[in-house]
Image (cartoon, rainbow over all chains, first blue to last red; front, side, top):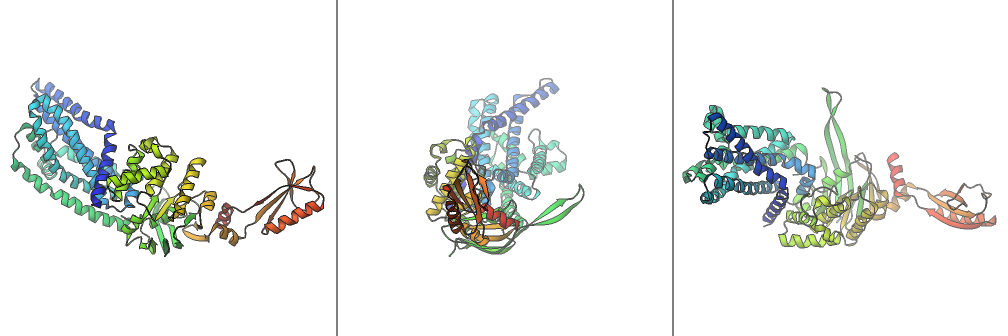
Length: 258
Length: 316
């Protein structure tokens, strides 16, 4: 019960703080439209006007999921540094709460925020390309993302533990984001990549997420396509395990009481 | 049983010292070196000393944030390393009065957040937070965003935060730093009230007047070691610091005496004596002046301040 109260308390506080940063929300909503319209315009120019609205929608969804990937990695990478800078981390550590609960609560907040963000962008895109009738598919995406983002939370626990050891969140976040953006099929099918990058793309959770979301919105998703996501839950288990080991090592090395 | 006890506490920091761009050497800073102390329940205990003496490290070890390299410490009877979870439930902590809060949340929302970190339900946390906002004098300001708070309001919110779990012991690391006199006074009154209510307060401060007025016991820390400890009166007694006796003489010119005389603020000569026996010497000076036919104006006996104690201890 206590852990639930702690989790609910952190999620509520962080969510309120996030939605009051209106500028962040406006930017993340604006970004996929801006980039996808840019690539759509470039496509039109290169193909002599043969680019279709569904291709724009493909890019829009890709860039929206990319934005989710980037914000979730960066939030995890910055979690400890931001906590130290604001003084919140020390107070969390001095309270009877497991750091893992605190980190997971924060990740959960980000997941909820990102699903809310996705609904806004996808709703606009769906209405523009397929019509309001297809809006119901967004409900399917919400359920899908609730499952598919769990491995992302695990993946980002690995990112978080990396930043504890490397201290500087910026390079860690930038490197992870660059790799993820390149190999995850946000803007182009990963089949266009060299084979080793394709393998990397398939190992990471994002290409499966973006493909799934596109197919659900287009109404062509089959339940069998969920199977990779069950395997990808291994990231959550791995993330939790590495986080526990990482914190033990950190305590031993630094003398900070976790 | 004492509220806080520790023995042989040691904490060294290993740091890199850069001698040039390519040359850096390992160095060790002794933040705490064999510190032992005991704090009784329900008292205000102050740890004072220069910057870098080890005060914050001490607070961080006792509040379970840092693990000591050697020695042991118990807070509320629990070991700060082996029973950290239990210690965390019974302590409140202020590390920096203006940090630790979500800037885009109100004071009330921040307090509710901290209440829930201690496992309170939303209803309990809100009720407790409102109570504390009243206690700290923030009241309606609790509905304003933290980013709009003045430093004084932030300090009050920090104290409220430290009390959200009804702690038995609170650790306050420089709770009035950077505050204007009025805000600092309010915080001091609050600390007095907490101690009067039976709470143990462990604080650090650079404001010796504040320490002297609030504390039952003071420990002076220098380079990681406790170099003096006692009540403010005991410390003055131990160091045999002198009192300053001033007797104003109502006369047009300086009186005929071998004692030191200066011109006072009111335009009359003032005989000043520095002594360890203030009562006896005051009577002697008055008798001498009266014997010579002078009238006595104002009389003042100035106690040595804790600042003088600290200066003497640290420079010895």
